[in-house]
Image 1: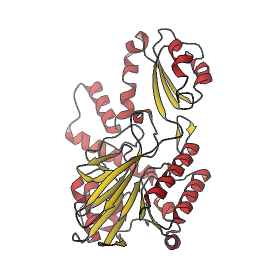
Image 2: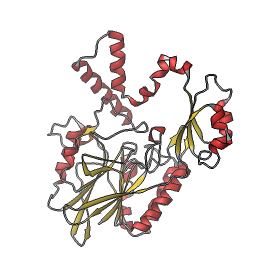
Image 3: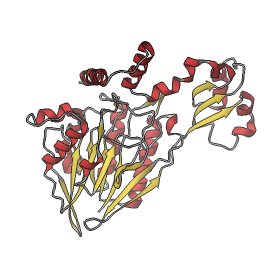
Length: 380
């Protein structure tokens, strides 16, 4: 049984005010070429299909085209909603689409029925668990104490009644403890969304979405495939890919990746204005078409630097300076760290600076609960 694992398409996303739709259309066409070469039995799309819960018309049209093209290849497609998606919108038309081999996870209601595929070794049961929070699962199991994301996912999996003697695959969208994050992902309050990898023990392969860098978490068969495109400069060093999973007899799983080449890469350049504008520096490179973050090291600011640099680098997304003046600015020095810290960490730092002592565990728990409640109300 061969499966292609995708996730976090984030269709309709804008990065630094640049629309990524053309890049997404390009990379989906490349993925279709890989599917044609690999001839898998199924394609798994593990959430964050869209970048917003109410996607643009262009993003919806792009997904529609991709699913139609996939369905014409006579394979099975499995799609779940992620934290950026509206589960109701993603589930719409799901029962009708099953006739075309497209399985859309319904809104979670406490039940997850597997879709069964068969090969020469027997059945493979695929379970589709969309992104869930403790409050979602608690409604379905009021008799059970569910306070953490691990509790919630564990309860959802236990209710599936997984037969561990069979081959089982789970498609889900959560943050598994130990995964390495990057700037383009949504930070939760104080790491409250962590899920312990041990809850996935009943499954031969876990197709995860949510984290943008391809990686395994714990065992090799609990895996994030990562985004097909780079969505922040913290991902500039990532090697984006498609994950191919092959299940043999029970206990036999092989995993490999196929690199993806984007229409435009994300590149970070550093140097003086004079160095970066020399024809010898950029000629023969992809820089003039790539998405660029430039750090100028000139001691004096260059008048209209962005406008001038965009003559050579039209997709310049971000411009910074690194010189004596910027390094001397205390508040500027921590600007990058702010983007990487959770709201709770920022509150703890503010409290400590104002009071000369850290928050107590009781204060931290109170703040975390309040933030989580506000977060859930805003998303609801």
